[in-house]
Amino acid sequence: MIIPHPLLGPRDAEEFVYLGDASLLDRPDWQEENADAAFFTYQYLRDNPAGTHRELWFHEQGDRSWLVVTRDTTTHDILTVEFASDVALAKAGSR
Amino acid sequence: MSYSGFRVIREALTGHKGWKPAWRDASPQSGYDIVIVGGGGHGLATAHYLAKVYKKTRIAVVEKGWIGGGNVGRNTTIIRANYLLPGNERFYKFSLDLWEGLEQDLNYNAMVSQRGIINLFHTDGQRDAYRRRGNAMILHGTDAELLDADAVRREAPFLDFENARFPIKGALMHRGGGTVRHDAVAWGYARSADRHGVDIIQNCEVTGFRIDDGKVTGLDTTRGFIGAKKVGVAVAGSSGRVMARAGLRLPIESHVLQAFVSEGLKPLIPGVITFGAGHFYVSQSDKGGLVFGGDIDGYNSYAQRGNLPVVEDVCEGGMAIMPMIGRVRLLRQWGGIMDMSMDGSPIIDQTPVEGLYFNGGWCYGGFKATPASGFTFAHLLATDQPHECATAFRFDRFETGLMIDEKGVGAQPNLH
Ligand SMILES: Cc1cc2nc3c(=O)[nH]c(=O)nc-3n(C[C@H](O)[C@H](O)[C@H](O)COP(=O)(O)OP(=O)(O)OC[C@H]3O[C@@H](n4cnc5c(N)ncnc54)[C@H](O)[C@@H]3O)c2cc1C
Image (cartoon, rainbow over all chains, first blue to last red):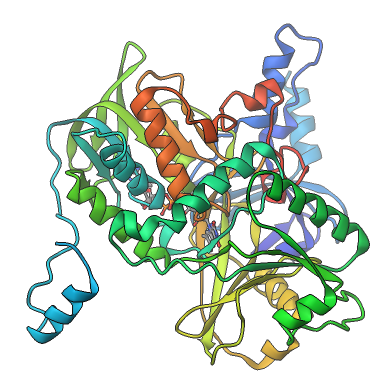
């Protein structure tokens, strides 16, 4: 698999470490009511879709950036790649 | 028709005209008491034990493709009971006991071959960890033996004992472990279930669940609606997408695992051997091919194929302990989809939907579990109580903190 890095261009997936579903960016607020239930869902439950999946990859052997890669889990085709920091900032801005 | 040596001779003398299909190609009826979704090893075993041990009737197994086309026909066929944690070990011990009597139970030759598993260790710390594991196994009534380097040399003289980076210091030997002909497990269970009246319905994909007032009443399939009082789902790598149709999210990610077979060689490797400093395990099939594998690829996948970095990693592991295989040619390579759970251990439990039961989260190790998984799932379906060997495999263990994390790596499926 080749991941098109937004800055560094096409990079072998071997340079990256995979974390999982990009929903891990949406960490619940620990002070909210029912925070324990929210953390259970956040930590353990997954959509695990067959098809388009947004997921976190870390460019460990490169620029050490976190990326949000949108990939088709049935074909391994990579659709879009964004910096996780950009995704998180956009989300914070829209709040 | 019963299979026996006598039968083989009789058929040989009469031109093999008496053999019949091993199971009927059933069409769906309008309703059943119990429908099992998934005609893999676990689904077929569940049907067999439901009918034979729990004396249930009106049972069907619905399979999207052909039975045995999933992981039960893709795995590297290793069976063993060398787990550490109590929730797991008693279950896998039960499974190994069932394997030992399987062929008589099914009247089918599954080529169960207990030729031993050697888990190599390369450091003192690893020796301690394996000693602890071996003691846990012995406490559960399974066999375990700690071998020093000389004893390993007697078992497998061809290993690279003097490897500078990964010297072999000994191994944990589990003589009860070994291999089983995987396809024969699916076929044997299917034939026996069929003989006990179970309908095995192939080319029938479940596309939805009918749920009224929180209770399951049947299944929508590509071959029409099938009514069901109880539904047991055992679809391994497809767990996430099937259960999503019942509105459930699972503590499971689907990942791809690859396996490899070399060209046929003369008898070389006595049992199963695993490398302790990387992920590589190997056995030799009766046809002579070396059957080997290693880590999962490590990213969510429903494509039944993997990528090259893992191929390289697995082969490097092989070369580290058996440099002699360097010139052996690879014959075939394939992948299967693993239902990787959040603690690396399975789930056999009821769901919030009444009448809907789930069996999954087998990760890369569900083949060895097939008999016990079928038996305990049948018990749950028949009695609404967990079987005593499977009480730890609950859905709520992630909420209550009672995870069964053999590797101790936390909620990170690609590390289990
Ligand atoms: C490469 C590889 C090596 C492995 N090595 C080992 C090993 O050495 N030892 C070990 O213990 N385990 C091993 N495993 C794991 C083991 O194969 C699995 O855990 C086990 O086979 C899963 O249970 P099963 O047999 O019921 O799954 P499967 O055979 O996959 O059965 C599930 C069935 O459900 C069907 N299905 C899916 N969706 C639907 C639907 N909507 N409707 C109807 N049917 C559906 C599928 O078509 C499939 O036939 C390995 C797996 C792989 C891929």
